[in-house]
Amino acid sequence: KAGVTQTPRYLIKTRGQQVTLSCSPISGHRSVSWYQQTPGQGLQFLFEYFSETQRNKGNFPGRFSGRQFSNSRSEMNVSTLELGDSALYLCASTGTGTGYNEKLFFGSGTQLSVL
Amino acid sequence: AQTVTQSQPEMSVQEAETVTLSCTYDTSESDYYLFWYKQPPSRQMILVIRQEAYKQQNATENRFSVNFQKAAKSFSLKISDSQLGDAAMYFCAYASGANSKLTFGKGITLSVRP
Image (cartoon, rainbow over all chains, first blue to last red; front, side, top):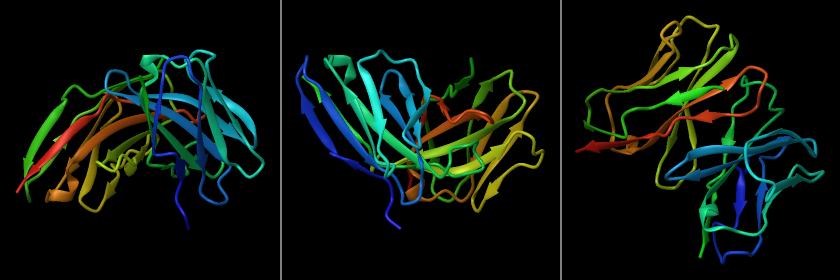
């Protein structure tokens, strides 16, 4: 079974641009979560999608948005990029995401650099 | 709000020795889960071990075990017979039973000396 796939692996953008990151969960998984990892702030929860609906959201500005498609693939979008958005963005999937009796599987992340 | 604290930024252990990584957390919830994740240079987070708060017995997974002290809100990870492949960042994390969000500590970098 293929793991969680995130594309692209690396991305370089300039301030003010927007970016879209993609995450394909493990086949059969319906819950996809996104996390931002930076050296200063560590790992922070962005949002979670289940069956195409945002089920939970972290404390990030509205420039960060996401969506989930009917095949459970998810995208996150960051508009008007700022230097502080430079980070590793990790995606994780699980079957239903209802509590943690299920294992959470992470992808290898997308490293975003904003110049 | 729930918080997870890992106060040691780095630790080092001799190969084949035992090392303990510390973690404390704060919550007012009664139903929650605690985790240790490993992040090697490949960046992929790998679940090492999980503990349900309602279980008194400490979780174990081969060479990895935890010391879960619920009253003290402490959750340490013990790695026995350390191997070179154990070198990585280790994150302690918390999730409440009704919430799909993980709250992570800042992480600790573990190095293993041959």
